[in-house]
Amino acid sequence: MRLPDAPWRHWEGMGVLLDALGADEGGARFVGGAVRDALLELDVQDVDIATVHAPEETARRIDAAGLKAVPTGIKHGTVTAVLPGKRTIEVTTLRRDVATDGRHAEVEYTDDWKGDAARRDFTINALSADPVTGEIFDFFGGLDDLAARRVRFIGEPLNRIAEDHLRILRFFRFHARFGEGAPDAESLGACIARANDLMALSRERIADELLKMLALDDPAPTMALMIERGVLQPVLPEIVTAGPLERLIARENLFRHSSFRWNDALNSHPLRRLAALLPPDPETARAIAARLKLSKAQRQRLAIAAARMPGDTATPRALAFRLGIESAVDRLLLCPTNDIVVGRALETLAANPPPERFPLKGADLIALGVEPGPEVSRLLGELREAWIAEDFPGEDRVREMAQAKISGS
Image 1 (tube, rainbow, N blue to C red):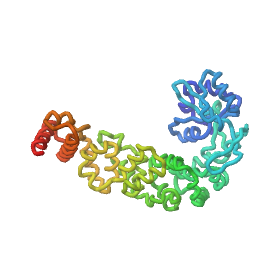
Image 2 (image 1 turned 135 degrees about the vertical axis):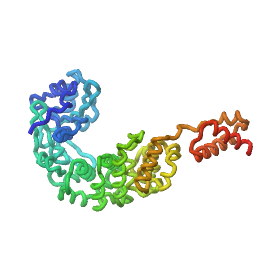
Image 3 (image 1 turned 180 degrees about the vertical axis):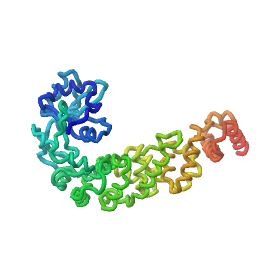
Image 4 (image 1 turned 30 degrees about the horizontal axis):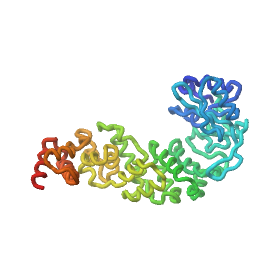
């Protein structure tokens, strides 16, 4: 089998880089995900190259070829080559593990292609390809696993997990993306047996892996398996069922191709999907977001989504004005009511979105005779709420409301 002649093989500067690394003499190969995805005829955005050259020599060769070398991970053997158009390629020296502790690996450089492939996690990720001939190198049965849509650890699964505990979550993410049918039994058993190892990982790494999985087309069956087998229990005991996630994904698919004017807002979003897995309680969501070390914006969106309630569909315009379109769509898609009601709410937003801002300012009230000070802010707040309750009437009506409020105060 040979590597397909994919577009990324002809990126501007790719030939210059490969020549600099001596690819025609066996000095470099394409490795990992780019090879896997090209064989599956998937779009490839990230390309990794492995080389026999030491990192410093790699950087020297890249610079000498007129490209830019950035020592992004030179401590671990990785130099990033910047191609024309600012495309980047990670070039990593062949390595073998000297010591691991479940989170980090101590490595030494080698010229052994099989030894380098052996330190990878899954057989389908250990494929490499000659950039010149396209010949595929498969040391561990990755081609057969790829054909069978099977995700399988290289060698002894328990050893692979001991090297890096994150591989437990990676196994399920890769199964959700590439797997078909039941997971590889030995690999699954090892992940279940070592689930407590997840507690040794940084919460940022857990969050990153979890959100990557939830961004896939349909992670619900795999998530249901993880919940059923207690894999998430050590780090996310609050997640007890995948049912709401299944319903959310079905609803996303139902409305994605509708006439909704903010169609991008209907695209699957991992934070919305995470909220579906959590209890409908914003305080719980905030606690989990803090535990996972999510950003401030992510914490806010997750908490808002978790505050979903049946009444959200009754006033979709008010919801969108208060929360923004993005969070309003989250709440509507997560709303515990039937699809017809949610669809009508989305159609209401599409046909008649709320205005972006309240039409009056403090200066307008002062011009109408209100003394500057706290009273201006109080009246503005009351008028804004009355304006929302009347479904956002025009400025003339708002001024009438203001006059009446001022006269009666």
